[in-house]
Length: 513
Image 1 (tube, helix red, strand yellow):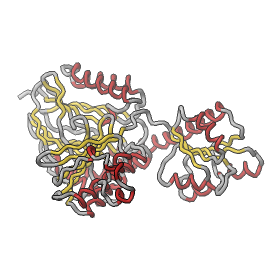
Image 2 (tube, rainbow, N blue to C red):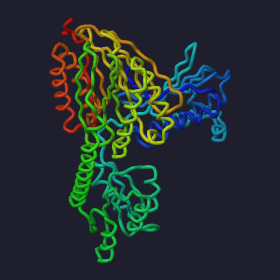
Image 3 (tube, rainbow, N blue to C red):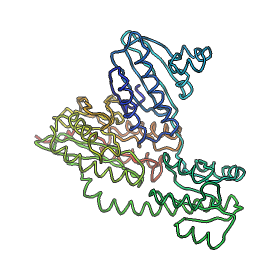
Image 4 (cartoon, one colour):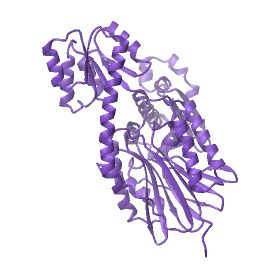
C-alpha cells in the first residue's frame, strides 16, 4: 500500500457489536470525504456484510478483525483482516448462481453477491498468519462540477434540460417537491431549478419548506409557463434568484445558471474574506523556530473556501514542535471549525511533551472524540519535533507521507495513523529521522498533488513537483520553495481546486560556534 494514505484503522473483537462500532466510525470518515453517496453506502454495506460473515460463519473464528480505509490516487480501498478460516470470496462467485435467493439471504453465499455487485474490484490474500480482503472503488478524479437539482414532473422537459446541463453540471432529478425534500435530506446541491406547477408539492411549496429547515440560502431558479402577477409576487417574497418562462432555450437557461452561481459565489467569497480578515491573523501565527540548528520555509495556497491548511508551532527550552494540518470540508462551517481546532490545538501544545509528537496527536484525537464541537469536522495532521542538532521526530494522522530528500532521491517516510477523533484511545507512533547536511525533509498537504482537474493533470502535477524538489535541492531554501510553488501555480491554476501547503526543512550548517 505504498501508494495509498491510511485514513482509518481499528482492531475490534469478533462480536456483532464491533460491526456497529466499525460502521459508525467508517461512516464518520466518509461523510467528510469527496466521495459519491452511492460509493459511501456501498462501502458501509460491504464492511458490515463481510465483518458479520466473519463473526457468524468462520470456523475456526478469528480472535479479532482489523478494518482499514485508505485512499490512493485513483481508488478508495477498504481492507478487512482476520485470523480465522480462510475463505476466498473471489473464488466463490459461482455460488450465487447455484443458490436460491432465500439461501443467499441466510448467509449461505457469505454475502459475496452483495459485495460483488456494489464494489468495483476485490482481492483476497491468505497468509499463514492472517487473511486480507481488499475491496476497491474508483475515485471520482475529474473536476467536481456544480451539482444541480432539477425538480420537474414533465419527462420530456427533464430530458431536454438534462441535455442542456449535463456537459457542464452534475444533475440530479426529482419529479416534485416532496421527492426534492427527501433527496435534500442526504445530499447537498449548488443550485435548485424547479418548476412551479407540479403534483403533490409545487415549486412554491418546496421553497417554503426549505425556508423552514434553514436551507433557503441555496440558489434557486423557478421555471413556469405562467408569469401572472400573483405567482411572481409569491416568488419574489421567497427570495428566489431568477424566474424563467417556458419554453426555455438552452442559452437562456445556461446564462441564468451562470449568472446566479457567479452572484452567489461573489457573496460567499466576500463573507469568507471578512471572516478571514477578522480571525485568521489572530489564530495563525508565524512559525517560531527557536532552534539554531534548523531552517524551514513554507508557502500555502488557499481556494477561499473550506477549512484550509495551517501550521502551528510552539517552542520551549530549545525544542520546537510543529503541527501541519488540513481541515476537511469545502463550506463556511468547515472554516469555522478549523478556527476552533486551531485555538484548541494551541492550548494542547502548551501542555504536551514537545519531544513526543505522537502524544500531541493522541491527546488531540481523544479530545476530538469527546468534544461535540470538534467532532463536527475532521482533519489530517503531521506533527514533528526538532529534538537536537540532527534528529527530527514525527508522527502522522491520516496525512500524506513526508518526503526525505537525500542522495538525489525522494524517499517517502511511511508514517501512518488514523484520522483523529474517530475512536477513543487512539494511539500514534513516533518515527525518528536523522537529517544530514545537504538533505531536506518535505511536508505537504494533499492539495499540492491533487489540485488538477483530471487524474492525468494530477499525475502531471505530482511528477512535476517531485522533479523540481530534486532539481532545487541544492538551491537556497526560499529560492527552492518559490520555484516549486511557481510550478504548482502554473499547473494547478489560481486559485487551485484545493488548498495546498508545502513546508521545506533542512539543517542549518552556517552556525558559528
